[in-house]
Length: 321
View 1: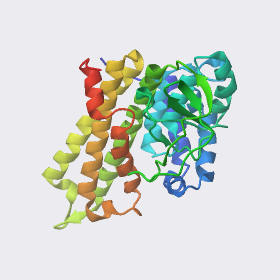
View 2: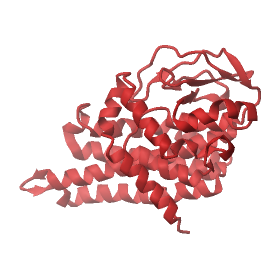
View 3: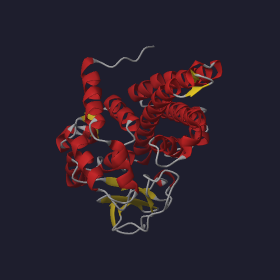
């Protein structure tokens, strides 16, 4: 089966890509990593104007309705340009808040317009007290508790993670109870789809940058890209990404838990393979934080375990979870 975007979806992808290409995202990522959110908030506002944050929000609250395919299109571009911020978490929060009319009317218009970032504890599906992403920047902080979903009044101290742009913050499990039985499973489904698409975009960017680099770097008087071993390594990455892409868009069509888990597993493993190949083929320069490649390398590794480890996703595919 071939999953081809229609004209409107391709135009949407081009619009998001053009917006991000003009945004100097490496500078935005480095600012965000230091806790300087001004440039990130400005980019967030432009993404909101493009309609990115309305793709999991009903039309009556300013959204575009539930559009998982378009969400995958947008998040692939967000990954390609390594955009920082609680992107997936905002989608999960929108789904959690969209079930009740009162909550939806109270929170969703601000999320759609870009006026409010949202985050949620990443272990919410197991009712844990795990950290949330960018709780210091988000205005809507949702904490999972045994009683249900609470609107946390603040965030704890930032914890460093492998990806400096992913700023982990604990959310106190106190505050207003906004949902006794929120749709955990549905929110997790959307979060995994968005993460899969984001990881796919990260992998594509890493492959593109690595191909360009091996054409320029020379050894023994020839570009290293002419070496058979290098070509085979990059071909393996390309095949993995090409196999992951239809899984991601197929999952966006069906939105079944097994399909989404398979898409996340495949896309995140392909993105991680792209990161490993990029690091090896760039050599020592790939290890330096000053080199832009590192912004995608660390994100590929972090996304691999976000919203479901490979083992958890395999369990869903095999029907064990």
